[in-house]
Image (cartoon, rainbow, N blue to C red):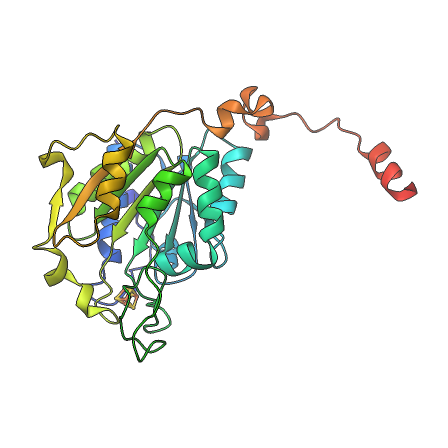
Length: 288
Ligand code: SF4
């Protein structure tokens, strides 16, 4: 087994003490250990925000992309080398704001990557503005009179857009979250985990005292993740005082890589490119 410490970098995390990102960091390393993944067998893609700082603290191949663009970068990496385990992470701000279109298209393509949303319901790095998952009415620096819009529902959106593994985790339950990440990486197809991640500095109303008494595990109920209507009902039940965590929905469906004729032959990076002559193509372009 790969030692747990092998996924640490020389840098200590710089998140605020008590930040929910610590729980996600631990859970990822626990899942990698459980899956016995060597550092070079994983590529992570990060967005911009407090979640993106994870790129400095976890020792796997990584690409720190730009705001909201983790999924297209992760998709490109997976399509070039679909033998890699590719994991994209982003915050609710970049992933469900500017990156929302990419989210929907990655769901419907069912590319075999895992997507972890660090959902703290606020823009943390910029010190507390309303994000796409902030609740209606929340007062922040950007909405002093209360947010007018209703929030984006990432789980419901993922289910109806075609994602084939949709789960909610909580960074206050690290072992449970590690189990979800392990399942998501093993799942063939696009797997989404929306993680309730307290931002203790800029969204203290959604911190551990709020979540701890409310979360419950779907494994302890008779929920059937193969039942789409049940999953949607749970995902859209935002009025309840109790918050389910676990796998909401899971389904087998052909992945993008399996459906693509070019990729069926093997990863693109294995293609022989030494003897490719592109001069006729260049000539045609230059003369057109
Ligand atoms: Fe975590 Fe919030 Fe601090 Fe960012 S600002 S590191 S999300 S507690």
